[in-house]
Length: 107
Ligand SMILES: [Zn+2]
Image 1 (cartoon, rainbow, N blue to C red):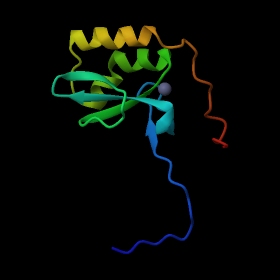
Image 2 (image 1 turned 180 degrees about the horizontal axis):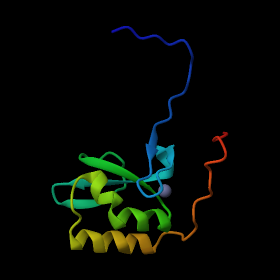
Image 3 (image 1 turned 120 degrees about the vertical axis):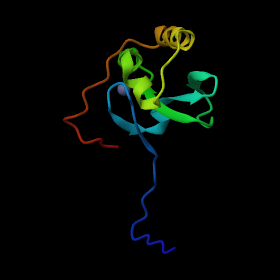
């Protein structure tokens, strides 16, 4: 294994929100995970299983729950889990995400 580090770049994990398809640093997103028992929110971010990410915005969850989430997880979300996810969605702020397409993410 040869490891070339020409630049010292701090690696920030980037993940895609399955609702709006925006790539964002992992910390800004909520992880959802598919486990043996079903689909749920992974608050620790470390649960085993296939995970996907969503903003904590209702609009993203709405889009995600309509199908993007299930297809990203390659599973069907059962009614019970869907009800749970919807109740979580209800607690999220209704703000729509700022259109950041035109701006290169400056930090
Ligand atoms: Zn989103």
